[in-house]
Length: 327
Image (cartoon, rainbow, N blue to C red; front, side):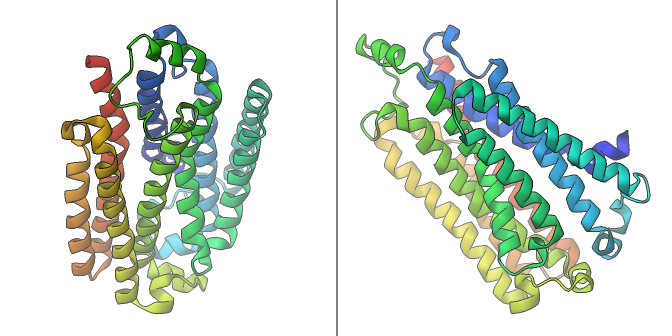
């Protein structure tokens, strides 16, 4: 059982769940001024988070299944399938998890009278399968596919809140002087804010994960050669790959700063963006580490450094929710 759990990468799954609940806490704090209207604690939101997590778990399993040959070169100490879990057990677990997630998507689509949950879950399940089987060895497509799936996580939360919010209640409360300083009515109409912010965080997640995938490819070139993969470092060389990843990291920092400047007039408090300071510093340090990296160990450290940036970004909506709850 322990080896099977390792196969699903529980830390990554925890990050997915915490990202969704972090954003949900903020949305509850902004929109739902009465605890009775909180959507984060509902069964439906739990189903959304759980289905997303098990799709990610199934994707990790099938990825390792198709990566056995490469992992014998890149990470021989981390091989689980064959050594600890039988391949047919891994395949069965992959399909069972996806079946459960698909059933949950049907439930959410029926409950919310929306095709979006079914579409996104089916899209994710199939993209993870084709990514593991073929796309990850294809130039550009593999990196973009996994970055896109990561970006869909906050977008799903935005879609859910866009559909769930009781706007009559919110607008009525605001009319009685209960408007929060973080909710930007001056910028967008209220029912679009959850969706907009979901896409903003999704865009940052996309950029950071694309950079992370490129660094990961630099870390795994030995195994990728055995598989005949056409990754950016193998096709264009390490220096071009480093520049590519650095540009993506820079774009995430520039986008973050633009987001701060635009929203400064709304929030009226630089303190609200405190988690972005270590994120920006970490991004600069990561870019320096990236250009200094020249072996598998240093690339692995850079890879982990990008994960730290993502965690700081995940903390931002959680931080906003805390500030609102203390206000």
